[in-house]
Amino acid sequence: MNSEKLMNLSEHLTSSSVASLGHSSELDGSRLSPHFTLAELTKTKQHIENVPNEAQVENLKRVCRWLEQLRLRYNQMRNEVREYPIIINSGFRSPEVNKAVGGVPSSNHLTGCAVDIRCIGMEQALRYAAILLDISDMSREDFDELLIEQKRSVVWIHFAVRPWGNRRRCNFKR
Ligand SMILES: [Zn+2]
Image (cartoon, rainbow, N blue to C red):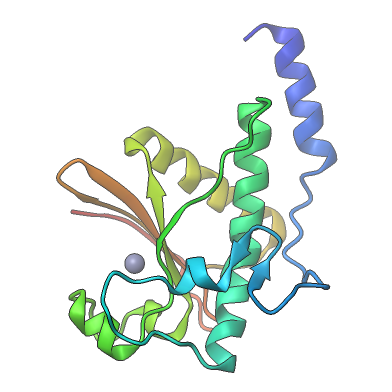
């Protein structure tokens, strides 16, 4: 990347980078935020009912505000014509679903506060993690967990935000 392109990119980033994690309005019922649907955040391979209550949906919306910022910043950084989506492997889990997938009983997934973000390898995971930390610093909002997890060659980020009592736990988990 030449220096002119770098300059443009950094201008582009600063002009829109006061991280706003504010509410977005005018969403229809199936959407949690402009780019994330309730279906994406509640999907499960288990054939078990997985329906969040109102408070759990509010928690999912809070996480989606971070995901929108992540999506925006990741795409600004790539600076390409195509837009890359942020893909969620797992969001809300009912107690039955959580048990079936071997989740811990205290999991943030049970309250709709956690998502597992799919990553194409460790480089993308580190990039996502760096962006999420930037969002936290700029918005002065804390998150509860930012864990880079790996099982064999599969990498994902477990990211959680609670309504209160966020512990800002960062770690690798294998
Ligand atoms: Zn998780």
